[in-house]
Length: 169
Image (tube, rainbow, N blue to C red; front, side, top):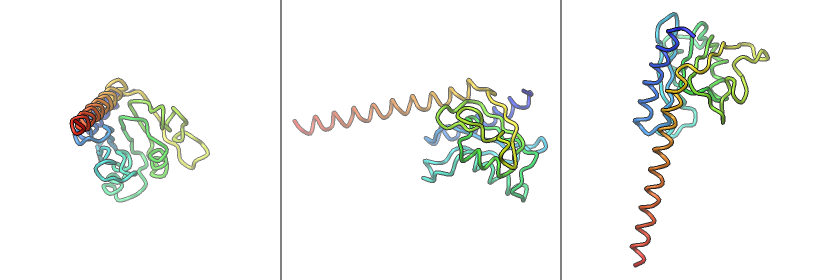
């Protein structure tokens, strides 16, 4: 792991925080090309009500616009959570050279946890994968988000229960 990996993952974490502030699952992504950040994005699924507005896909779209090509050869993707099957497919198809992620995703991770689409030689392109960069911080932001979400839902359920009880009396 290079010192740059930590620096860029910190930038991805800043993007994840922006998502969390919007009530989105806090996942952030950065794309670096020739030492320059060319794209940054965060999850927007809830905001857009669109299943494909994952941080990685939004960052890939911005990077393609910036470079004027769909081929992101030589680019590196930094993302706070291991890419899912859809995002891993987009990484392969966009020819991203390297993927660096923080936290593993035991339910949907396709960069080494459930499977490794990114390094599968059956595809015409493979990406180098580095996992666990700022893993604790990347995992903690997700843990905190889902804990708060559960607490909010529990409080709302209790409030609705109390409303029904007072309406019956």
